[in-house]
Image (tube, rainbow, N blue to C red; front, side):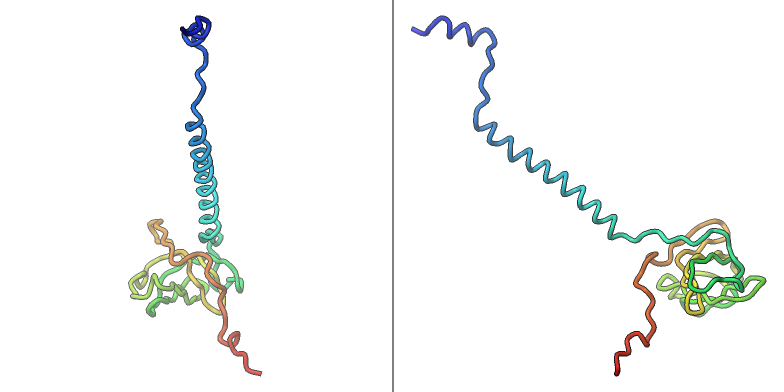
Length: 160
């Protein structure tokens, strides 16, 4: 016959021991959740570091004749001529050749006599446009903001 004290202990709400199988399963589940959280955080950080950083020129337009060499610029004017993915932008002070990259390859990115604002890098005698701002305020990103540095053909010449 069972002991009366043992029956009272079980019936009075004594804690039942957790089976060892549940304990054995809890540890890998917790470890997997922690690993997923760490992986997600690391992946998000890597994607942020690998993505292009925004490169915006100053919003105040400068006169085309006063553009500083090799710098970020914003210029404003009317489209005078279009040559494929390049166009000539003209203001009261002069003209500048603007290169638009792949976005302007078909030649219909801008129209002749259209007033636009261009943000980009002035280098090697023309503006490498990163953004095109239309008169109604719409902004178009023309290229990834930070690409590989521009290299001249002579940089590849390794002859003695």
